[in-house]
Image (cartoon, rainbow, N blue to C red; front, side, top):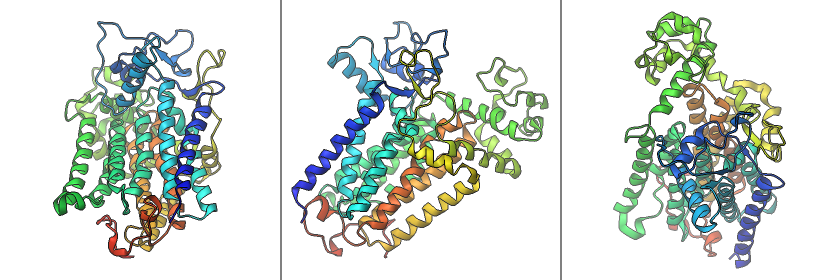
Amino acid sequence: MIGRGTSFASVGLGVASAVAMAVRLLIPVPVGMADNNDGSRLLCLVGADARVVHGAQVPFWRYVVENYPAVGPRHRCESYPSTMLLPAWLAAAVHRYVLRLPGVIDLRELVIEYCVIVGFVMWAASRLVRGLSVAPRVVVLGSLFLVLAEATFADYANSPYTETAAIWGLAVFAVAGVAAMTEHRRRRAAYVVAWSGALFAVGAKVESLTLVVPLGAFFVGCRGGWRRLGGRSLDRSIPVLAVVSLIGVAMWQGGVFGGGPRDQQTNVRNELTMTLMPLSDDPGAVAAGLGLPRSLGGYSGTSIWSAHPIQQDPAFDSSRVTIPRLGGYLATHPRLAARVLASGSGPFSRMFRTGYYIGNYSKADSRGQAQREEHRVAVVSWLANRFAWVGFGGIVAYWIACFAGAITLRRRGAKGSLRHAFATVALVLAAGSVFQYLTAVFGEGNEVTKHLAISLFCATLAPLWIFAARFARSVSSLRDLIDDEAPPTSGQLAPCALFNRPA
């Protein structure tokens, strides 16, 4: 039996982690990400105006803006479906009605929300690894905090971006998913938390909806121990409800329920002019292959925001430039498809080091030195840069190693054991990294490094969970760790059916 003192230590670690993250992001000056015009859409929906705070002397994407005023009474907001609206609404409500500060929202309030998420994740992780020996436990918890504090991920907290919701949701899912796969008193609560985190991640933005595949597969198999409450029918219906809700959120993001299709149009057009055409030996042939005039190949290297974008050309036919059509063209041009597939390897390895708007200081604090990269905590990106020379082949080898490690350890762990649970979630995260990589390189065209953040976050957490699985108990569940009871017998375990095969 593990004493209550360990529980207090876990709470203390969570609080300390939240405070440390606040110091990391706010002191001596706040760091975050400058607006690339996403703020005009996201913040408008909570009543804030991101347009009036941008000065004309320095481009607004080169500095961070914290405080936003209210939009005018006649201003109409553009549809922008995202689960990031929930924390933004909460921050705005606290800003106006609790703190009673001027303006509508201060992005540093989103930083505080992230610190709370970090505290929860570190607390939950410390409970999960209580059965590990001291050295592996320190490695897991220390590495996890470095990942959450990494500039590539943490800086999204102080920004008007929707990738933030995906990172937060995946972080919560990573710990709650492990707890939901083993038998203990709080298993059903862990299942609901993991479910919420998954919904948050899938609904973050259009690009994140492909996470529905690996996350949906997890909930298809993880029953969550509902049989005690409603018998076998409830044990089967809850996973179905979880999967249906994930699909529903993905459809909402895809515009099926009235969400704006603008992002899809933007991404597919930029994919044509910023990815396919520049990587092709004959940009005009790409245009002709899609049923467009060859002359449109002259737009190679431009974007929809260029002075004269392709969509303003009278010869441009939007019905010829869709995701299915681009997919069909690439299917018949495997050499170009291979180039596109490999094109994301450089941004994937560089992580946040783009020289763009990722990791900038605020305009006032930078004293005119705009567009500064943030290096306070950049351990993960430093390591990734050391292996940038391996190229796309190295990235594939990395994924294969993650899949192989997770599958091997899952098979070695008994049903419902911590080893099995850690390995299964690692498998989901590795799959999420692959799906998000493919989404970024084949579906977006512009800002590939920024859009690879979700793939990178999954790829960073997966080996950490594999490491935890290696040292986790291969037989006992969390009952003896979370419930402070003796380990149950194998007959007491209620494993996730799809993932739990005999060891």
